[in-house]
Length: 290
Image (cartoon, rainbow, N blue to C red):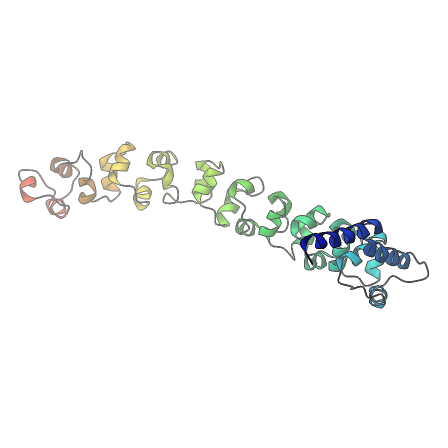
């Protein structure tokens, strides 16, 4: 058969299908199913509907066949034994399925996510047994909507930031949940609040020595936090106060203002100066604490 004859054959087939109307076979099946569903003397149960389809050589798992059930109420179909997953295929939404009595667990098993269940009217309390904080956050729930069912630690693990939790939890609760001082500072908690809830000078070091001194942290606190002589010098801390806090000669020596005379005047011994890195020649002629 040459190309032209093939063309004529397929054209004739196209014209026959066109004259028959669109989806003739599917329309016939639909009319058959519709007539069955519209009968008033039968109970539309899952088993009865399956038997009807089987008797008519129509597959039960074909979504196009299940879709015809939409003319029935979801409550009637649930009573007839249809599952949430099957009714999802029919085309019923979460709100309809919820009103029919399906639980959040059943609808999750049917393939609905937290966002869809929230849109269907489920609350965070109704969903918490089946979804974690992360999934509920992705589903559109806010910290305010979740705080009754999840603590700050769980919400942090779920991806909420300190800024998102600030309106529902105080600094102490957020610290206990594992947020750092810098995270709380970024959430606009002030430095005094951070100190009041127990953050140490070490944890607040990013604020700078001068700021911590204003918060009444002591020089020993700042030394323990790892501040250097140079950092404290820039914050206008006296050398004598640094000496009293326990800074050593080697630590002082890093400051460009320091010299053997100052080291001597601070009350260090000659041996301490030698141990700190000065030479014998640099120390000769100065008064040293015995």
